[in-house]
Length: 537
Image 1 (cartoon, rainbow, N blue to C red):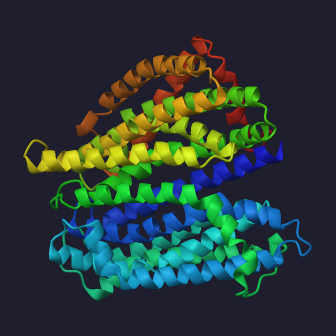
Image 2 (cartoon, rainbow, N blue to C red):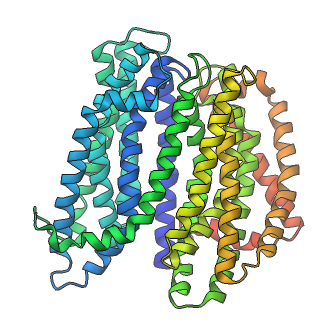
């Protein structure tokens, strides 16, 4: 197996285990605080704040710039030790300062992201935020260390460490239930309850970061505090990361508007917590399929782009989209049919599961387009172009804001029920992503002088042709198992079992139809699956 293949298997396996333990973490959390309660939504806002702030720092700087700079620094006489020491010192100072300022500003941040919360709920969210916002420092250190390990080809720890975070959180949330009982129906939150719940979330991030430091020796680098930042190349880093930073900042502003809109939803209806859990389900096939399989394709595409072989780049784009499309179309059909049982995993009743399934279905509209966007966007990156992705992302962000505001207007006018507001926001985001993919593909086609779009659109159409009857069989299976009144929606664990059964039926029928259609991509997909099986090469 090639080094890229081994890395892909390692990343894919770690992603699967991480997502599964993340699901279990979410199940325990819902059991502790409820899916549609004021306390659950307050915690969802507070625990999301450090992720939002960190995303601007991380994606704008670390992912786009730090790894290439560390790789280049390896050619220095000292193997990059001085550069990494300066980088870590600067990064730690910036992250610590950001964490302190954000924690002090917790009341204003909560008010900014959740202006529709009543005063008591805002106060609870602020109490949670004081415990959660220090996560910014540890998220940042986790990324710094993890990206440094990746740059030195030590892939495993960065992929597998989040599993430890999930385990710590599961234990802590179970302890919360044991000490205080499920708080979903309670309106009285004590300081001890806040400390255990939010403190557990932060402890998980701290432990996750500490795990990576245990593997630092494998990099061969010895770092020490170094405040001589002149040699770190801040000007070059800023130039490289500028457009990416602006792109992420625009995405965060669009997310802020969505959060503000969802804060208007009254208690008892699907809110921000339901949206987060629906997104967690949505991201399962994306992270496992697109990130694990698409990353090695991106490596090959980048090599051809660097060599100026545009013709081969066009071929790489088509092959990667067709391969990803085969898996993603099947996954979309399976998850759509099993939406209600899958949503029951993160809800406390059949009625909540049905409402949450609507949100998931609205997100699923964009799953296939986002798989295409993964390839198209990274094709621009392969040509060192971060400026063009910024512009087509701005289009998407503007549409996200407009559709969210439109949904809020419809809610205030009585046209849209409160129970459907989150689904409308999710559908608006999916619509925005579809437009983004169309614009991005058009721009890339202009740059490369043709992408053979017809060839991979034909393949996606063939996959859809196989997915429709497969989904119909899966829906029939759901009905045979009792439908919304059956055992698959009666309990969280049974929901997971039911979703797995229905999903497997859909995928088996889907693969069988593709075999009958003699889809050429099926042999490629089979080879990839075999590569992921234990003992296979």
